[in-house]
Length: 376
Image (cartoon, rainbow, N blue to C red):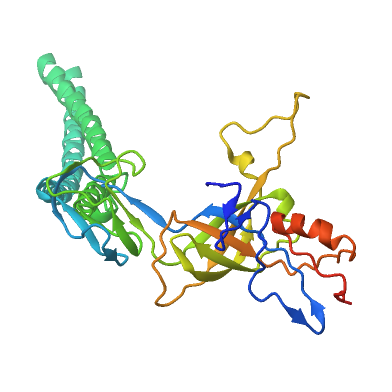
């Protein structure tokens, strides 16, 4: 924020950065009492307003720009469009993958049922091989069958039992492929959910090829058609900006010694250097929780003992009342702010008035006259 230190007054007389010799509007008498108020007047940058930096979330070439520089836009209006052909192709591929995964899950369910039937057949074969082996075991002792026939029956039984174990392992694998539930709904299968997520991401990227205004305001730094944009953070590769033209406020950094009687809700009068014939009204909306130095990259460290006291500044947020049909205010304009604290000053004795009066006037302080009655 620019702090001019001293600010030229509108009547041509110099004023200091401490106060203004011009009283705030409304200063006068009330019930026979002079209301001596101390309005502070400072040179400040035209406060603040919503400023949205617009960046492309997806890379590509800009195929059309829908707004012009300094054009008013509403929230949601299209600012520019990015070539979307690759993103349409990606979305089509993602949708095809969703259908493919659905078919794969159906095939895995069918394979699981097939393995179940193979297991039943293998158990039947094993039971038959067991009965054959038992019969050959009785006959071989009487030499009714050859030893070779007995060995063949035993081998058949062992093979049938091993087949059962193999099929059981295949069934376990098929069950794991179905997330442990052979009757799982397709929409709940992890592979299907992943495919849907990829499709949603592709649809999201396609939607981001149309860049819209995040807030209502004035379009600034508009891009050119054919410009290549990279999908990244707005602070790294901004494309344009939208500056709010309503709901503006002033961030005034007053000295801590000036804030003795400043409170939220107090009225303020604002003048803008660009429009010297007009005044705006507002009120103190809030007082900052800390001085500006506390938010600096390298804050002051006063523990060394080698410390020089410097008056700190505290940011105030001053809301500006909208003036229908008034001049267009812009963020960054220089302003002067007067805050009416409503604080009454002690009257000066008559013999000090001629001596200190010019000095106080030069400092921008308007003392109450000696005959003014104080508020009971």
